[in-house]
Length: 230
Image (cartoon, rainbow, N blue to C red; front, side, top):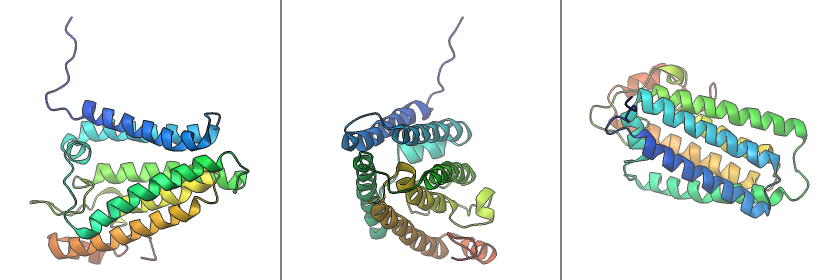
């Protein structure tokens, strides 16, 4: 009996390793400041992140392996100053937010139980929307750029909103402090959401200027990030 071999060039094994390392990094950022591992909310948060990462590797790897390879293994460097600023800000502020959540786990919660349950539900919905957006946009490479031959994504959530992945990202950041019971972490979370709004505005301007067909798409789909508002 011959074992089934992994197809040549399949990005899933390498992407899975990178995803696992990110999960470990997230656990370190949460549990080292917490000075212990007896933190149910922290484990649930990490498990949800691990599940989402596994879903991305599995589904994107099977449906759009080239996109998974670009996102995880061959992501182009940021080509614009504002994208570089965004990447630095999001990385730094995410580290701060998670570390503050971990440190706050040793003290009384700044959020009620109903708020925390609702926040975890928002985290799950954010992951679901982000995955739907990735599966609907073959150009979601993780960098703000227009590639040769790129077309406007209009399927799935893009039929109702021009940047659904960024909506999911901002909602995820804002839901993290209440989910993990930290009032202080709301400050970096709010800054992270503002950074997402900034990138949305700058990327939308880039697409209007450089992506064929995007201007007509923007006329049909009015809202960038918040339905009925912006």
